[in-house]
Length: 232
Length: 248
Image 1 (cartoon, each protein chain N blue to C red):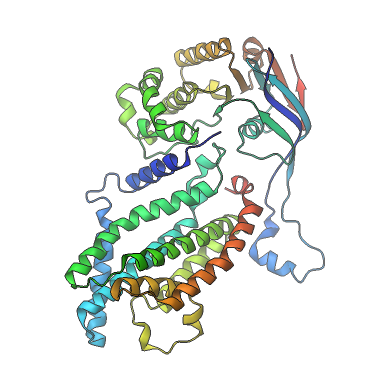
Image 2: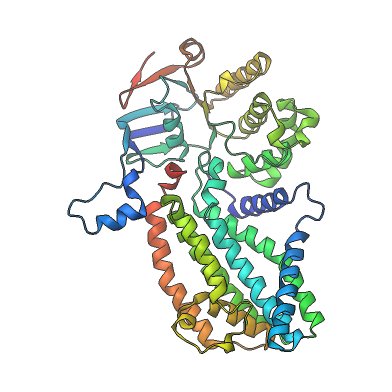
């Protein structure tokens, strides 16, 4: 049975960029002007793209900086809303888009596990049940009680990755996290993602490392001039 | 994504408050202490000037200032609410309304510290005329107005940077022109009183606490204000709810 996990249908997306002309002063002056200033200067990121990802697929997104990889993940996760078209999600979705986002700097590791998990839709009892597994996987040991702001980038990655990957989801969206963290932890993460694939979970990973994506993913797509193209 | 909003809201609001006073010796008690200092100082100062009974003065200024502090806190924090939650907004697919609800809960948690001060004032001045039902009605209206104003101001201040200094200055002016620390009867009622929603909100609460009565005209003014404000807030929210993530 090859049921879909994600269906993107005729998706178009414009990134909203507010024009400098939309200050209150300019807005007031524009009342008396014949020609109106445009409020925004939107950037077209995607135009009529279609994509069908089946359950258990590992999909890679490869392209240069600023072409829309993270934007596509945010669209799938629902942080951004499509300008046109639609995205259908079949199952629970979880994301590791920005390891520094979604965390409270003053809160300690345990509190941050709760914050991230609650905002990902987990119940308190579910978090309580999983918390030991998350702390063990992150290898943060006693540092788990220290404020998040005292963590190094690698430690932050361990906490965020462990919290997200050990939550019970069907679709995992992972954005260029590979570059952060030490080699040993990277290996551990890849092993965990492989386990997820075997469990028929869907994984979408973005990276600028094409060799890694080719080795790890079933399909690799590239974003070129607002279009999504199959690379492998 | 199905979010257990109440659990998440409650947990995040608690963490917010905890972080605010992390490494502080007295913690949230500072809120009560600073309000108490302000109320006592102003009451004694104005007591010398107007020679009015000190107990009555303490209660009048105390009730006015404590509830003004609540509404002022909500409005001033709403100016920066999306910037303060930027990392969450950019990572999780949650409506911006969630952050206004979080602000409301955090403000109410902070307010409970000042509520303790109000109870102390009631005992100190031996004033137990409070009518709990009338108080809840009046305070409920204040919470609704604060919520609607914070929703509007938070969006507009994120969109237009000029709004922040405008609102900050307006809050100071409103504090001065509203009978919060000075008695309403020293000047003749005029249009500034009638249209000043903050006067009506605070007067309604004061009456329920000090005299145990329901100040009908202030309640009506508050209700009319809510009726006018609700469609405005809804329109601004609907028009901008998906844009905020790009503006912070």
